[in-house]
Amino acid sequence: MVALWERLAGLGQVHAMVIMPDHAHVLLPRLEYPELLGAKSGFARWRNRRRGDPGGPVWVVSDAPAVLKNREHYERTRRYLHLNPCRARLVADPLAWAFSTHRDRVDLSIPSVCSAESDPHAFHAYVSGDATVDVAGTELPTADRGFCRADLNQVEQAVSALCRTPIDLIRRRGMVRDLLIRSVQVLLGLKPIAVARALGISKDMVLRTPHVPAEQIDKVERVLGDRRFPSLGVHPLVGTSAWRNYQRQRNGKHLALARRLGLPEAANSLYSAWR
Image (cartoon, rainbow, N blue to C red; front, side, top):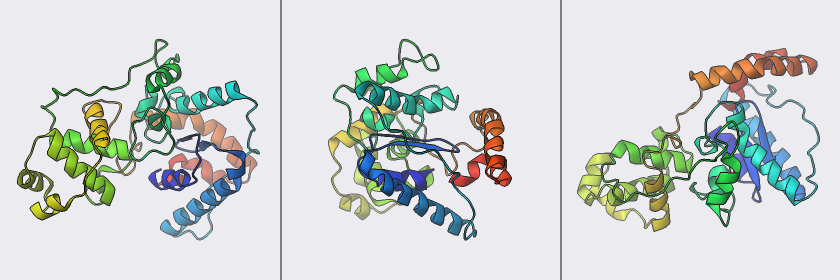
């Protein structure tokens, strides 16, 4: 999922996006559609090379893209996309699904795929006020300056979630590593030598770490301990009850579609396309 997300995020003017276990929804300006096809083709080539399959099918044929009629249609479509994981019972809150621009729209992602709403609280209330979440809506996380009981593990989980980076990679990726180092230093109140010991790096690396904007560290603090922002694993869904439920819901429809297209083997492993 991470690889596909990064390719689609690189399209530029993304209005809304969600990647589900066996399909994706992307809302783009009409002129960006050829670029979307190129990104999908690039992902297919990358995925096949990784699996030693030079030309195996990744995508099934889909309908032509829908054109939104007006502003109301646009807003309802964005809400529908962001609620997809909740309505599929994969998560209980739209904030809990990392591969959705809902986090971007409420300014809880680093970096952001699209701009934040002028009123993130109102937008989140509008999206989360659904029967599959809570008809009264849910609250956005808020910073708790008294959260000094946070530990290294919680900071790592928050950075992984906000940056959509598997937790085993956050100490290796430049921008994400810089955010981790500075967050540990600021939020845990540690001196450079203590940060170095905690992360297993040199004191010189801590001292050389570039400045990180304060608003990014504020985001890390806001989601500390929030269960809607778990760290990412390499394959975050595999083996979970949510994944098994999703398979049961989707397999019948997926099997029928695959057989109609002459690709019955594709129905046997919904998750395989994203691994």
